Image (cartoon, rainbow, N blue to C red):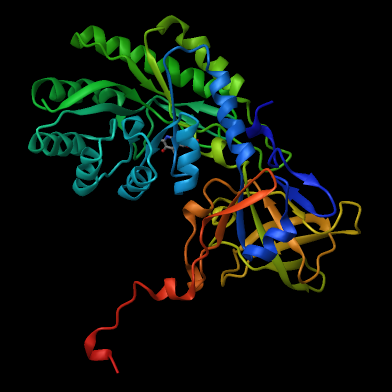
Length: 433
Ligand SMILES: *Cc1c(COP(=O)(O)O)cnc(C)c1O
């Protein structure tokens, strides 16, 4: 087992109330208010160790945390501490990494439409690699690097032609994707780099085949395609490309019906193919599987309603603005009631959010101890793509985030205030009173 295969943080214990990292979640809710994101440091460091152990035999392995999953300064510190580099996709993420003291030479800048100012910032801050996504970007990056009298170290993002589904994969010859170069365009871009783009230094190829992947075969296929393509390019163009970035995507366990592979199984699938390519440096850039399991969200239950001949709803004080995944992707979650034991009388209930959309349902029909106002609900596996996708919809303040470890809690993101919400507003003079 590796920790991405757990639904709950490893330190979760039911005492009188539910506890994580030795902290009573009822107490946390009282101290910091709800909704509250809670990150368990032991689970986060644990999954980092799982990854490092699984890939220990690969001598040239570079782990990069895809920080779009959750990018806050304290989380960056922990990942940097664990020796991870970072995959960043915006000036905001790059700035956060820089300000948090991350090793910028281990940062890879990704994205299908990097702006000139973002590229400049990345070059100024010493970002180690650019994953060049398209012809336009290659020209733009070369131009900016030329103006700065720098060489930009790059990988080329490619679409390997693998389509990933959650439980199956379909290999298609050509995929229509907004990300990366089609393999049929490789010769053209490499010729441009060799002949014209003298400020680009090409090191290898990069692919990322999807997210919440359960099928290891997709990875073996991807790695095989990348290795083959690198060999082909080296031969045809007399190059020595020796870096292969296989992306992220390993799945996690939101509910009992999810069965993601372990980090060891992922490593085996990769090693099976690359043993023949020992001199390659392999990059892996997991996001979700690193941070999801360590995070939970606490909510306070408010109003309830039984629809005659319909569902029973219980509404909580958060929803689609702090966790857009259920309304965006019909994502499913598991939850427990913090202050009621498992043997409490149960009922089937639908957990509704507090936002003004009928689609704002966090969990559809889950069996839980009978809920009443004031109960605290703990929703599991919310570390990834929750806070990072959060909005201020309905002009609601974004929640706080705390880090728990060894019975101690620290705030790592302050709750927004009502004044924060209006701090970027401006009233033109002619409307002033
Ligand atoms: C999103 C993304 C990742 C991380 O994906 P996860 O599913 O969160 O592991 C890695 N690499 C690239 C290029 C991405 O776009």
